Length: 115
Image 1 (cartoon, rainbow, N blue to C red):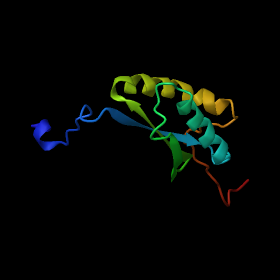
Image 2: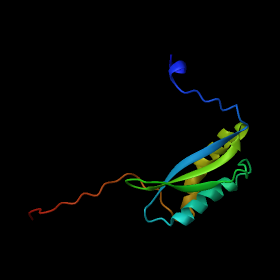
Image 3: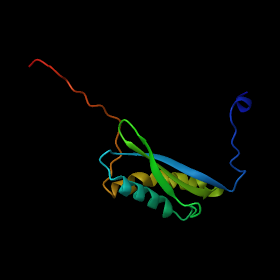
């Protein structure tokens, strides 16, 4: 029943597959440096294809972070290897540039509080 009612994607139909990572960075971060650090992480991996090229863009201005979409391409054969290596490298790549990955938080302001 779920096969009939859900969308099925045949990833073996084409020889390459797009990688996409959404990475949240601090609102204090220099977005150009953050994007370059993330793109370099993919470009430096020999299993990532050079054509189409690696690229990134701001995906969203979220509650606690600016979300960057990082995209690249790999062959189907190497997709999961590249995916896992990239996930393992994202924090280090941003740490080297002193860019923090924020966690959800909320500021609470109390007004007219009696002392």
